[in-house]
Length: 256
Image 1 (cartoon, rainbow, N blue to C red):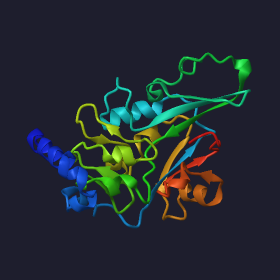
Image 2 (image 1 turned 180 degrees about the vertical axis):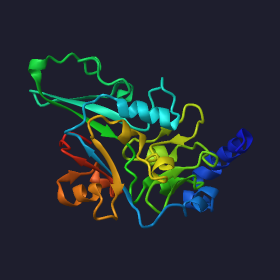
Image 3 (image 1 turned 180 degrees about the horizontal axis):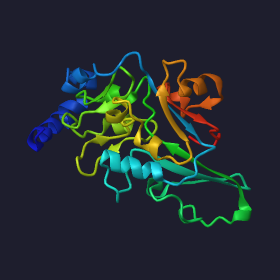
């Protein structure tokens, strides 16, 4: 899509008329929505993150950036790892320098120096798009550039995205961002171009500790399904009702 056309659409949707008329009034069938027919309805992709195994190495972030062409030396990333340090006073300190691209090489939490003797517990939590069953981002996109496939993965059509940012604001998990080059909405797609060909996601392949797993939740024999059905797992921000399909093992109550 040419810049001229994108600029015209932006003016159309973000101008005075767009501000006064409900987004639903602008909904129309986009090429992205037509492509939403892709995928196998017998599959529902789901993800398991085992926080007890994550070592905070950042290999997943590096692999994701390389695989999905997210500029390496930028703070944005499709997936990231957060470090949680709980001190003996009960205060939780959280950081994720450069999305943990280079791991955690310093003991400092941002500008805070926490002595080892003052630490009650510490752990790492990987995060990525939750590929929600009821994605808020799809609902608010005024042009249908964000859409959901038959197998549950939410994708973005860059050629149709007008960069309005509604989806970024609507996501309760903060997983969306503007691509620094394409200037369109961006997020994790479970490496759809790989998994649709029978491959694993780049982050799963890169994790040396086996903290990440992808599987078909409609297959009762899939290892991921067995974990979700038989073990104690948790999801993030259940109160939003989006029904995330990323499940966590060993998730601490301090994590949001």
